[in-house]
Amino acid sequence: MIRQQVGDLLEIQFDGQWFYVVVLSRIVMFGGTIVFAFYNDGRRQDLGSLLASTDGFNLCTDLLLPKKEGVVTLLGRAGDTAPYFKTRYSKGTFYRGPKVKADRWFIYKLDDLRNPIAVVRRLSDEYRPAMDHSVCSFDVACEKILARYSPDQDPRI
Image (tube, rainbow, N blue to C red; front, side, top):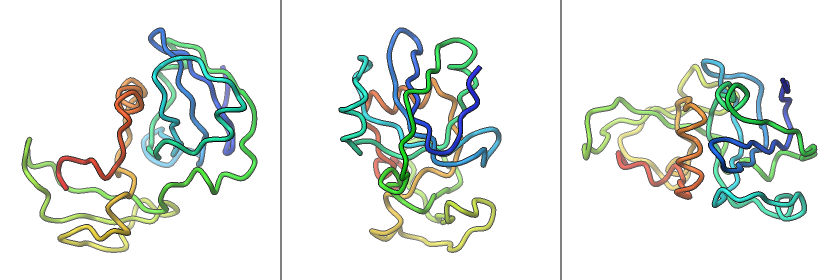
């Protein structure tokens, strides 16, 4: 079993498809690590095209499911991880049901996900693309990758 480290570029074969992530943090929330997930259509990619791209998004996910039910392979090291941080913030709100807009957002810096730095009613252009303040299982991450999700598409905004 691979033990991922910051900067690792991982190829993950899961549910018959291929996914690629760069690990950006150690474990931060409930077993999850912050990663950069490359947008992909589920097909296998070559290392050169991955390293030339920053087309994707940040999210916090755990890799337990693909390690247990899939194949996780270390492709290499990303070196400098700065280009893979689409944001340095995360945003969270209380769930109020489908099609309900959030009326209060908690903003966190990625280096301190426990203490909010701001509570805002509307998201500014700086906070709108902030990573979702949650951990998702890898099967949910796969759905987001295939759908070309980005955090500013949150239906609660």
